[in-house]
Structures are given as C-alpha cells and as structure tokens.
Image (tube, rainbow, N blue to C red; front, side, top):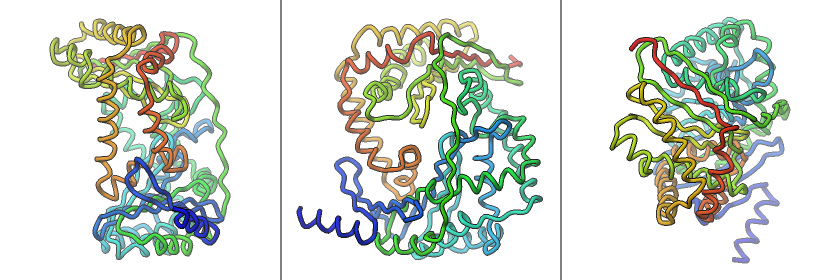
Length: 443
C-alpha cells in the first residue's frame, strides 16, 4: 500500500495527474488538470477497440443571464459543428464518416456535452479535431444566420409536444429571478431575434468556451499516460479566459402559484405539481432523502401508482422528478389524466400521499430495497464506454469531479426512515408549490 501511495505522489509531482481508486464506482480512473485549467478524466475499461470521448462545457441555459439572450448555450451546440479554418464543417463531417465515428451533442440547463464514439486507433485524430474546434471555432455571419433559422425551426417543432409546452409554462410561472425561468432552448422571442446576434455570439464563445470551464471524460480501450500526453500536446496551448456569469438567486417562494395552458390540438389533460427544492449536494441529508422519496411515493412500486394507474385507471402517466441541478430545482409530480373530470381527484390524491409521508414513516424494507435497486441500476448502466462517460456527465458538469459519485451513494445508503419524513415535510409544502394544468383545445 505504501508503495502505491508513494507512486501516486510521484506521478502527481511529475505530471499533475492522480490515479483514483474507488469503493463504489467500478473503474479506476486518472485525473489531470493542465496549467490552463482544463480537467481531464481518463477511464480505462474492458471495451475491445472502443473509446468514448466527452467534452463537457460547464455552461448551459442557466448561464444565460443577459436579458434577451436566452438560448445561446443550445445555439452553440449547433455552431460547434460549423468547424474551423483548418477543418471546416463539411471536412469535419467527412473525417468523422471516414473513421466511422458517431459524433453528437446535447445541451441542458447546467451544461453542454459533445460526445463521440470511435475506434481506439483514431484517438489522436479525434483529439486533434476536438481540440481544434474548441480553440479555433470559425463561422461567417451568413452561416450564423442560417443556423439561427434552424434553431427557430427546432423550437417550433419541439413546442408541438404538449409536454414541451407544459414545461415552458411551468418554468416561467415557478421562477421569478433565476435563469431556470426559461427552458434550455430559450424564450421564443429571443430565438426569433438570434439572427441579429452575430457579434454577441462571438462574445459568448470567448467567455464560456475556455479550458478552465471544460472537462474531458475519455473512457474505453485506452492507455492512460499515452492519452494524457496527446491531450497535453493538442490542448496545452489553449489560453484561459473564462468569465463566470452573474446568476441571480431565486428568492424563497411564499405562496402557491397556479396557471393553465392550452395545447393547440388534441391531448389528454396533464397535471404538473412542482415544489421548490435544493441544489445537488450529497452533504445535504434532506436533499438526498428527497431523491428516494420521489420514487417511494410516486414510482411504479408506490401505492399511489397502483391505485391511480392500475386499479382505478385514472392516469396513463404518473411520474416524479427530483433532479440533480446546480441551483434551486423544481421537484415535480406529473400525471396525465384520462378524463378531465378526474383532475381534481388526482390532484387531491397526490396531496394526500405527500401528507402521508409527512406524518408516518415509510416501510423500512421498501426503503432498503430501493437503495439496493438504485445502486444496481447505476452500476448496470456502466457497461460501455459511452454509458460510463455519459452517466458521469451531469455529475462532472455540476461538481467538476467523479468522486462525487462515491459520496452520493454513501449518502443514499445512510438515509433513514426519519430522513424521508423530514424531506417530505421540508420540501412539499403549499407555499412552495406551483401547479400548472395543460388541456387540449380539441376534445
């Protein structure tokens, strides 16, 4: 053991990289932070010939704090495929096709992730291409305007979903000050004005696409030191310059809010009941208990699910979301109700369930079974390089590290019956509640 610790210390002094061993996360990994602030996690694993490469920008729609500028984090997901002077977009696409790589990206409220799956023989070429576009993105105003039009088309398509329309309304009603007030794709009015924002887009890129705001997660059939050497070579010259955004904290909600939204078409009514929660923090025992409470009270093994979905058949969807967020999230219960006349009954059943968890202790065996199931599900989803890197993306984006996974599942194991009741009492209160009901215009 002393030899291993000594070796790790020497490695840290010489290269800045640290090998990590774990008790829960099943793969050893190495972390290195370059002098410019870029963080790299290298995770070797059994995956003959396959590699996943995630570039996680710790900027999402949350960071869009300037009035009239929502949607630019998602917009840059599109622009990053426009390429550079060395590798213009069509050339980049052709190279990806030639090496058989699967390249894509997605944007969330808290981060943007660019991910590739490819053969290990192409690792250096991928590192070269990705480092080039992150440092040297180049696009003309005409290309910018074309892509802005495509983003507006994406918005118009997405809003044809009742749930997208409902989510947009919920976030707008529930938040006053925080940037979670707008969805990831942005306010429609802001998206329509994007073609006028060419100069602003350059500023957005210069402020947020900087090495100290990016984390690389590379998993698969790779050699640790060889991979790190390539990253140092291709990313080492990337200059610092990250400018943190000014995010207004959401003030405490002091009274229940409600709203209705009409879907321009045919749909079953949908009930969305949301409560203000706490940001992701494994040291917050009550928050960790809430992660389990959502499943206990509203999951497929819950009494309410059995009652409303199976026995009475009043709903065809019942789900709870207790999200992992950087700032104040919404803890939501969503039910799609088969008959409009049953909306009030379903709403009261949700409230009664929460009251039950506030006044009585959950069954001990159910709680322990859920803990085991969550551990099992997390571990079973780590069977490929892409699922390993993808499964870590949100944790890495919010906290900057993988070690938080160990901390989270240790905290979950420590949750007690009393903690579940405390979470129900702490978060699910009328003064912190927002209720939105969606109905179709055609019945």
